[in-house]
Image 1 (cartoon, rainbow, N blue to C red):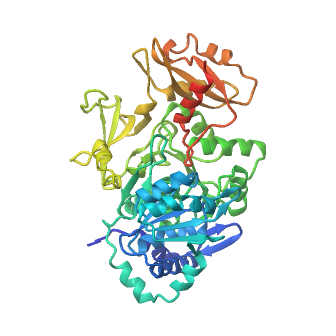
Image 2: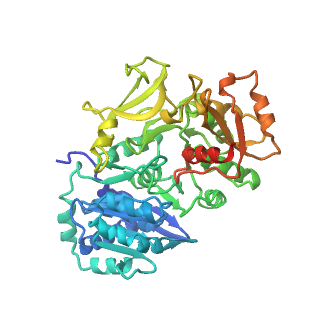
Image 3: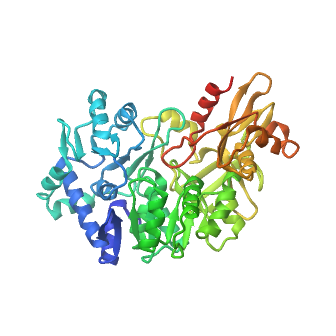
Length: 526
């Protein structure tokens, strides 16, 4: 029984019933109402049935943000299948590994985006995909491969599928069915497919109510849809509340702020790196952003605080939150009525049905308020495991349903959780624990420091020492930056080396790829 659970595939029809003629989507000058969008989802769902997609099949989607992506995120679960969103920064071996490992029977891909030729990479991956033995059909949007069918052909064949056939398929879908395999960002090792059923839909809807999102909101949708943040907090949020979204295939701060002014945008989203870019763009060319009502900005780490504070003055109030692929996007959230400190220096409080525990990193016992330790999470949104990886699942998920997030956090006396950093980000300098976020937050106060990331570098005497990668807007010297720290913070926290770079390597969700910075440090420091 599905009881009162809203299923992923039913969201567009619900939106059409409640807000049929209300704006739903703007993309490159084209516009859809909720009614028109729901009709498109129905056509795609019928196309999938015509293609041979069965209940329980995995369907991989590899394309940049576009209306067809949004249609697929509802149409695939509507017919009882499971969507496998693929990172658009994947290349031939990445896509081959993920499609094979997920046992996807169908791959739907865009031919190209700007200079990136996805079709060529799919073709190059074909030997591995065929060897995997699961893939049955490739659907290409745009230029075709010899082995593919076109998006248009799929829709044309779907027109022969009756409403009754689609209805019969959709009523078989259960809330416990696999809805998504969310592959982790892969900052270390091979990405793992995080299994989610339809239940997290409730979590997103409850947050929509918490944050007051409604049919009058215009969300700027530039976060990648293959990532839980963009998928849940923007795309789903709009469809659940009757609002509209201005969709961007890539994040271009100038285009986003122009759209805020032109479309009366009310909600912005992103990590501190997105907001930092938006602030810089607004400072270069001021737009009228008075229509903005609220934003989401996952805060808590000391390195995020300066940007989070600045956003309140330049744009709008923001709410913070915490989540990850394994738990769903925002299983903790703050509220617009929380204090400025709570919204910019903490990571929200647990959503309904979610429990947090902070445990000692070494001994494993539960810690009290305001003590830092390993963050564990339990609740209905937590993954049932990693697809095809029982050992990896057993490492993070215990028999009582507690997930080891791999994060260091603190539960405050006001009920808010503070995300401090990853276990693996914590440095051990001569036996002392050093939080890179603490050092980053301190050095971000230095005039001219635009962005900073601190990583560990091997050291014979101290095991490892901090190294700072810096993006600077002035002629700041490494000596000046290190001098700023002397006598102000503990000597073991002071970076031994400062490396100036033009751009931080980052995952598509905007998180800095520290594993890459560690490699850079090994190559550049003699």
